[in-house]
Amino acid sequence: MWFAGLLLDVLTGRRPLTALAGRVRDEVYEALWELRGARTDWRRRVRGRTPYVYRCRVFPTTDGALEVAAVVALDQDVFRALAFRLEPGDEESGPGYGAARWRCTAVAAR
Image 1 (cartoon, one colour):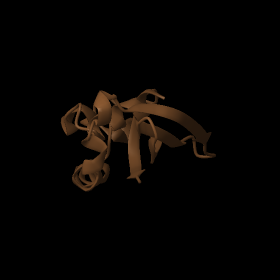
Image 2 (image 1 turned 120 degrees about the horizontal axis):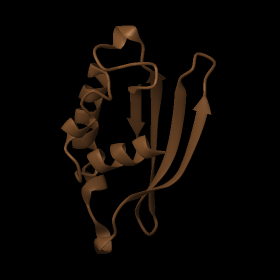
Image 3 (image 1 turned 180 degrees about the horizontal axis):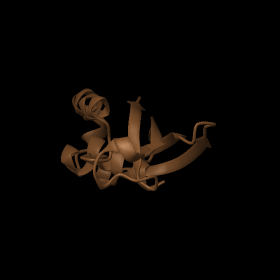
């Protein structure tokens, strides 16, 4: 899923946190700021390998949201977990956010 790759790029320092502006809620933005600091081991590039999303599972919920669990490969034998929730936009989401637009409302990384 494209959003898992975007989150991985932010957590590994390949993209700035501002790359997610408008795609995450304020509380998720703050959580990502803390995760970036807590997951400094994700930024190391061992043997020059680029981290990538190894496997991604999407679980639709009854309320129309998507809960996603991803396994990310940081190196040849180093894997970590990334989970997040995407909710569809609505009229209350602000300018430019229609039903086709998704926003991240929760994120976790281990």
